Image 1 (tube, rainbow, N blue to C red):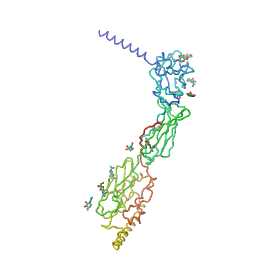
Image 2: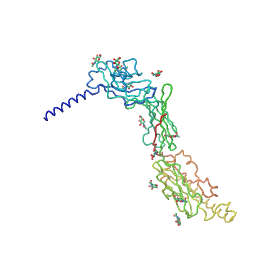
Image 3: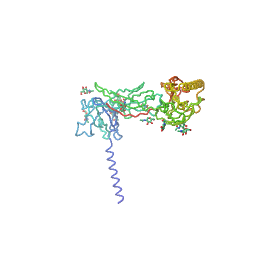
Image 4: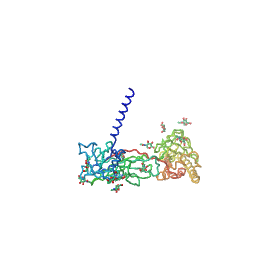
Amino acid sequence: MACSENMFFLIVLFISGVLVSFGQRNLIATMPDRLDVLTGSCVQIPCSFDIPDQHKDTFNSTILTSGVWIKGNQYFGERPDRVIFNSSETVNRYQGTITGNMSQKNCTTVFFNVTTSYSDKYYFRIESKPFRGTDTEKSVNIVVRDFPSSPIITVSGEVKEGTPVSLNCSAVAPCPEHPPELTWTLPTQFTTENQLQENPDQTKSVLSTVTFTPSYLHHEKNITCTSVYPVGTSNKRAEHNMMLNVSFSPKDTLASISPADPVLVGSCVNLTCSSTANPPVTNFTWFQISGDKPTQVASGQSYTLNVTVDGGLYFCEASNSHGCGKSKEVQLAIKGSGEHVNPTVFGVAAGTLGAFLLISLISLFVWRRNSRLHDGLERTDSPQGQNSPVGTVCTNQATAGEEPEEPAEDQPEEIQYGDIDFSKLQTKEIPAAAQDRVQGQESEYAEVNVTGRGATS
Ligand SMILES: *[C@@H]1O[C@H](CO)[C@@H](O)[C@H](O)[C@H]1NC(C)=O
Ligand SMILES: *[C@@H]1O[C@H](CO)[C@@H](O)[C@H](O)[C@H]1NC(C)=O
Ligand SMILES: *[C@@H]1O[C@H](CO)[C@@H](O)[C@H](O)[C@H]1NC(C)=O
Ligand SMILES: *[C@@H]1O[C@H](CO)[C@@H](O)[C@H](O)[C@H]1NC(C)=O
Ligand SMILES: *[C@@H]1O[C@H](CO)[C@@H](O)[C@H](O)[C@H]1NC(C)=O
Ligand SMILES: *[C@@H]1O[C@H](CO)[C@@H](O)[C@H](O)[C@H]1NC(C)=O
Ligand SMILES: *[C@@H]1O[C@H](CO)[C@@H](O)[C@H](O)[C@H]1NC(C)=O
Ligand SMILES: *[C@@H]1O[C@H](CO)[C@@H](O)[C@H](O)[C@H]1NC(C)=O
Ligand SMILES: *[C@@H]1O[C@H](CO)[C@@H](O)[C@H](O)[C@H]1NC(C)=O
Ligand SMILES: *[C@@H]1O[C@H](CO)[C@@H](O)[C@H](O)[C@H]1NC(C)=O
Ligand SMILES: *[C@@H]1O[C@H](CO)[C@@H](O)[C@H](O)[C@H]1NC(C)=O
């Protein structure tokens, strides 16, 4: 019983094994799964073939071998019209030629003048003296379109601002005899290099590599790669738009006082720091210049303080993972106790008192100015960092984050005086403390991240 059952299964296994071996491929063709082709253009099908071991002895590569392409279905016995190309025939349904050397098992084929009716799958067959066979398991799917597919832009990893970055744009070249031409549109100067390259599936692409030096000014600017395919006498274009995402250290850092007018001692004042940065600012730090040294007084974008007698000079620093930026100094101006120091209004009513106050304020101001200028001279002679033990975040690192090309940073800084009278006289006051920075010694770090989507036209 058991023995005959085993025999039965063995027989079944034997028969199925024979069936499997009969179902094996007579021919092994290697070609891409899919090719995207333009109407009116040509298509090159990269193709190679091999003979399975059990047929090796019947195949003689020195004997002239025909290459045959069959459309839609591998069985052409009752449908000879499925044979659209036979290299042994002089006239074929498809204009084409086998450019590969069949003796070297290279069946690479080019079809010309492609039309939308060519969209289909195709099987390859060889016919030589004793041996003939079709690869019934492998076909290439040809997809014909009127418009080319978009080129593809790729960016590699993290890129630093100020450091050259390379982007690739690649466009398929299904007809390598007439490859597309790639052009770039960028918001800055660039250099490009184009080459025809072979993909892993043996299809061809045109690769254009563009190199440029990004700056924070290129953040959220578009770049475009355009491919132009020559088709007959006209051209067909496609493009890929992409918005640059440039990471950069804080720029345009600005400290502002609210309210802007001179305030009374004891009242509340808000200092607010603004800055543009990518990624956004993670840390705002406030400094007061006391003596000639910046002293850290607060952190946070806004700093609310209780006004004391001396007011003072303030600046802020903004930082992110790529560095930091420093604002100009702002003057917190103090209103005299209850009086308006405005001669056009006040002078008539209380001339004597006003003149006295004016003189004393001028004296105070001149004294302060002299002391600051004096400080400034000292500071410019002093090595960096010694004078600012607390404000080290930006004085050493962050100045490196300032762009030398940034125009605002190169201009003399103005103290923003709230007091009407003296602001007119002294707007060109230059605090030396704001100028003692070392420019451009280290490049800042920025990355270019890109998001994008293709578009055809
Ligand atoms: C292949 O064909 C050539 C020419 O007919 C012949 O001389 C040669 O012996 C054949 N080779 C094999 C392995 O059959
Ligand atoms: C290919 O052409 C040759 C020569 O005309 C012919 O003998 C052969 O049958 C053709 N093959 C197919 C599949 O039509
Ligand atoms: C096959 O022939 C084509 C020319 O039609 C050539 O470009 C390709 O490199 C050849 N492939 C191999 C594997 O030799
Ligand atoms: C094809 O390959 C064979 C064998 O390598 C070589 O003898 C022949 O010259 C080649 N034909 C062409 C057209 O390159
Ligand atoms: C493509 O077809 C047009 C007409 O349909 C013909 O004039 C032209 O010569 C053909 N080109 C090729 C390469 O066969
Ligand atoms: C661009 O292409 C070249 C060559 O294929 C490759 O070495 C490089 O890594 C690519 N760069 C990017 C950004 O994709
Ligand atoms: C930038 O590209 C986007 C699509 O990615 C597009 O919507 C936008 O209009 C483009 N902007 C400019 C200025 O070209
Ligand atoms: C200061 O800021 C706080 C909170 O941001 C706000 O409530 C307050 O009104 C502001 N004061 C002035 C004088 O702007
Ligand atoms: C741009 O890059 C920054 C920093 O890498 C990242 O935080 C942000 O999500 C990116 N933005 C987009 C739109 O990809
Ligand atoms: C913010 O800056 C201050 C002063 O430099 C520092 O002590 C603190 O660790 C920073 N915080 C973050 C979250 O970076
Ligand atoms: C400012 O200082 C005065 C006097 O010291 C005090 O009464 C008041 O509460 C302070 N205001 C704030 C907002 O700290």
